[in-house]
Every structure is written in C-alpha cells, then in structure tokens.
Length: 281
Ligand SMILES: [Zn+2]
Ligand SMILES: [Zn+2]
Image (cartoon, rainbow, N blue to C red; front, side, top):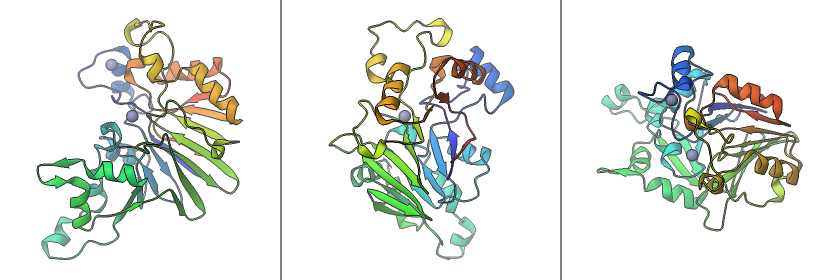
C-alpha cells in the first residue's frame, strides 16, 4: 500500500498571499516541501483522492499523480471541498462537447450519505455544483460506508451520531492506516482503529508558541477545539498505533519544514506531513 500526502496545509495554505512572515517568505523562495497546499491524501493503486481543497490541482501536479478515479470526502467544510472544480480539470473536454460527444469515464464521488448530501448543497446561482457535474457526465455519486478498489479497503467511520464528518480506515494486505484530517475532536471510539500502523491526523495545534511569538495561553479556546501533542500521544497509546503523522498544518503555527523536522527529534513516534510525502507499507 502506498499513500501520498498531496497537501499538508491547513485552512490557510503556505505561503499565504501577501504575508511576509519568515515561514511564508521561505516557502515562496524554496517551494515544496516548504510550501503547503490544502489538506488532501491520495491512495496509489486505487486512484482514490480524499478531499479537494482550492489548490488541489497544484498538489496533484506536484505529486505527479497519473489518474484520479474516485474522490472521497471527509466532510463538507470549504477548506476540503472548494477545489471541486478540479473535476473539470480531470474530465472536462470542451472540444468533445463542442462536437456533441458524450464524456467518458466519470469520476466516482462518494462519502457517507449525510456528507454526500452536504456536498450537494454547495452551490452557485446555477444550483448544486456537484449536481451540474453529474448532469454533464463528469461524475457519478454514491453514498457509502466502505469502498474497495484493487484489494484496498477504505472504511468510513462517522465522528459522531450526526455523521457529518468521517474518519477513514484504509487497509490492505494486513496493513492499516487511519486518516482523520479535520473536525475529529473528540476522537470517535472504534475497534477498527486498534493496531493501526499509521495514524495521519489533522486537528492538532503544534506547540505553545506560534506565529510571530504568539503565546497560546491555558484558557485559549483553540486548546479545546484542537488536539495537543499530548492528546495525540494518548490516542496513539489507547489504540496501540505504531506511528503518527500530523497533517493540516496551519501557517498560524509559525513553523517551517525544518522546524518540524527538528521537532520530530524530540517526540516519540510523532512525525509531520509535507506535500509529496509518500507512505509505503
Ligand atoms: Zn506567513
Ligand atoms: Zn480542515
């Protein structure tokens, strides 16, 4: 099994337009892996893309992805969905359309039924964007709880009873990866997480000193909304997970690619994602 972190950034990509902070200036100068696009993952061999942030086209090019057959969504928040126009980049052929030819090989778009309904609600004055793609034959959609392609099983675990957010358990050949990019606190309980090789998780605040020396006080609400590194270690121990990779890294954390590499040295089995990182199991 091979997974690719296409995008390791958060709600705000790095470099942030018009920002001259140390992190953004360096990312602008050096490009990837100092630069980070919005949070997304690719499953090689199954051609599955998880989530479409605004800069997903750039991320797919950076990782040299050859084909996207399926798009799964974790939830409908804009930082994970607003790049859905990539579907046009992947399948639209205006020249064929100009001759009245039907488009071939639609992308399969799938998620938990409730999430799929949320995605359908994303619209312009012309109506549902996904509905438009469906009517043009660019996609077909399917509500699912599990998905299997080429011996790679992807299970969608709802974060709570409302089922508006999913955690993915990706398994093949006895190996298992959990992908929990966003809005996963409190972390759901599931036996399916037990003994995973890797947990790739977002929703985490990294450190007590953030961008431009901002000190995160004890009472700051971000501490409730996001996991601390100690809480991440707790999840790792609870489920006997071998290794954690933290993704969805916000520009606001004020840390560069080099800073994250240095931080890994101080931590036990916790690593940090970067764009183009390949995870082979
Ligand atoms: Zn910046
Ligand atoms: Zn997010």
